[in-house]
Length: 358
Image (cartoon, rainbow, N blue to C red; front, side):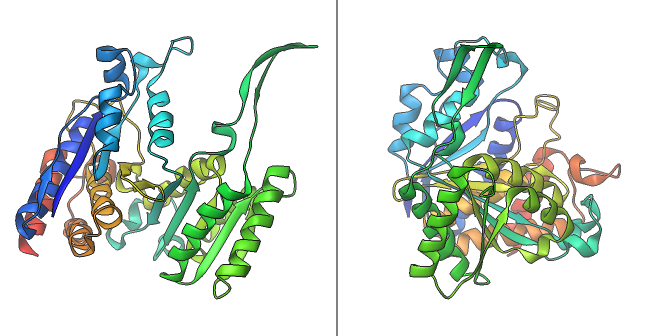
């Protein structure tokens, strides 16, 4: 296969972890006879510095013309001024909108070798394998917002807005995934308070009843879900929810595994290229030290191969290599709990070695 994979290293530790994922993709290409063209483009704070825009036109054009996009991370203290004309995060929102990426897939999976790294008891987290579907282009992040003068001073407002079609498409995608897993789908909302959530629940129920009646389907309020993720995460399989709730719950769920450095994500649409990235931020406090965990970005490259290039064997090979490296006891600093740890490049080298032995 010939494919163009645009790399957006971004800010902070982004360039360090993307470099390791690039090595893994090159190794896969060599092993299977593929040709991956992987040009780099600016995005985020670095793009603000060089172009005055967190998502320059040339970057967006390259992404739209690609087969897939691999992103590191964006942002940092340098660009955190709330009064700035633009911020790195604006580039993220825009690229999702321009690429029509309405679904964010975040797997929350624990590894046997890392059970001791979780803040929860091993018997609670063992075997956890949840796939979250977060709606990505609607909700409060994209609704009308602004400031105005009120009776008690300045007011700020942000509106949560969802249409039936937006709910239908994300629920269909999640339900189809559930059919290929354990056949269980959970929809998360706040229908006891929010009218938007009542529409969400009504629409989700209709889609599942009419098109996916074979699934075991339930609704859970978001505050209850936040508790269940800590007390009984193993009870869930596929979870679908809106933009705001998904943002919060998946970050909470990430800690079940012991480190954000282990979790990848995929943002996809109905067609066109997908965007793949680790869920961690730019971690400016450790940038340049060579201690960042590259495994989430490497696992994001596996999701890229699976969802955008339909290369299931290659994706599974990367995931097995990560499993093998962890089982062998290799750890970066975030996983080492004070013990011996590997650098970013050393961990990447261990994954490459595991791939070569497969």
